[in-house]
Structure formats: C-alpha cells, structure tokens
Image 1 (cartoon, rainbow over the protein chains, first blue to last red):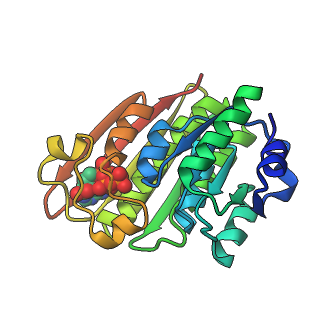
Image 2: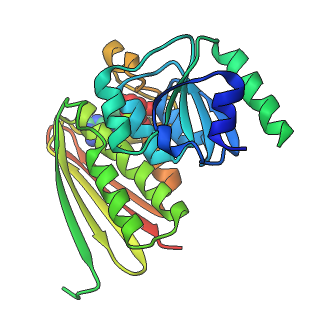
Length: 112
Length: 142
Ligand SMILES: Nc1ncnc2c1ncn2[C@@H]1O[C@H](COP(=O)(O)OP(=O)(O)OP(=O)(O)O)[C@@H](O)[C@H]1O
Ligand SMILES: [Mg+2]
C-alpha cells in the first residue's frame, strides 16, 4: 500500500513531498521521543507524532520512515516544510489524535 | 593513504538546532552515491546523528571525522565538552541530564548512547571530566 492510498483514503494533508507519494508503507510507529523513534521505528513505517520541529525532519531522514504523519492538527513551520522538501521527506497531517490515526493506518495495512 | 579510503570532516556547532543533523545527512547522501546497502546506511546514519546531536546538546559542539573503506565506515566524534562523569549510567537506557527545554524538542529520553551502541559494530567511549569526550564507532559494510 502506497502513501498516496493513505493520503486519499484517510484525507491527510500533504505539507511536503507531494512528488514522493509512491513510497510503499510497510508498518507504523507512534512516538514523540526522537531517540525512541530512531531505536524502534523500521524503514518504511508511517511515523505518527505530535513533534513538528526541524529535528523531526532529521530523524525522518536518518530512520528511513516512509513519512511523518503529524497528529492532532499540529502544523509544521515554513522552515520545517522547506527543510523537508530539500531532504525529500514526506510530511503529512491530520486533525485526528494519534490513537485514531494508528488504528486507521493499521486497518489499511491489513487490507494489504 | 590508500586511494580506496574516503575521509570527511565536520565541525559541529554547539546548541545550534537548525543545522543539527546536516553532517549525518551529508554522510548518508554520500554513502548512497557509493551504492552502500540501505541497511548499512541507516545504521550508520542513526548512530552518527545521535552522536552529532549529543555534541550539540551536551558538549557545546565538537568535531566528526568519517573514514569510508571498502569494508567499513569509521566515525570518530570528539569534543572538548564537560565529559561524562559516570559512563556506565550514561550508557544505560533512560539516563539523561537533558533540561526541560531539550525535552520539549523531543530529546532527553536517554536512548542516544544505547542507540549508538546498538547500531554500530564496534563502539568505544573515552571521556575525561573537564576535558571532553571521544567516541569511536565502526559499522561494517554488508
Ligand atoms: N558528548 C557528550 N558530552 C558530555 N556529556 C554527554 C555527551 N554525550 C552524552 N552525554 C551525557 O550522557 C547522557 C546520556 O546520553 P544519551 O544520548 O543516551 O541521552 P540524551 O542525549 O540525554 O537523550 P536522547 O539521546 O534520548 O535524546 C546525556 O544526558 C549526557 O549527560
Ligand atoms: Mg542523546
């Protein structure tokens, strides 16, 4: 299942990475503590978080997640969007809480 | 030096959260251009970034030297920061001296050094209080 399918079916906003939505999503990880994310998230994961700073982009780069999904209506600043574009990081957003998003991502992954 | 060794050097600015991660990102891009496996690159990038961000947060900056050979990638992180008084404590999961402000940025879980150890194939830490810290890691190329 590709990022594009998640964006369309879950009604996600795309802050950055419009051209990279063909990336395959293979799992999910939820967390706001960046070192936990780097220790535990797997490549290809949808990373669901309320963090939205420049370090979030760096962590997404290092850990090879498929995308960062910002929950609870959190919006990245222009500097963060700019950095994400430069680094080919996909930034997505939703007003839903982390729990709801994780459940929706998990359901879609199950649909294969 | 044999010509199949590539060396890179980076100076890391202390308390600069705008460019933190740029050095590790640069190494990651270079390794990708060299055709190194994604798994090796990811291990290296996470281990190096944890070291880089520790220099930014805890050591008032530092230096990173990278050596890429056909067999492995070696990273030497050196700083003239405060040093680490209790290495055993610092190496354990959950130990952190990070401030509230640092926590709000998403750091301070006390997982950085454990991640560096986990993702590297060899890990050595030398430190002296008041002098600084040198961490040497290698990641084998798959
Ligand atoms: N280069 C360094 N110079 C001085 N102290 C350091 C250095 N690196 C780490 N430390 C000390 O070791 C502790 C543990 O480091 P570690 O990277 O594991 O966790 P952290 O940086 O506090 O949090 P996290 O990495 O999870 O965001 C730090 O809180 C700090 O006290
Ligand atoms: Mg750390």
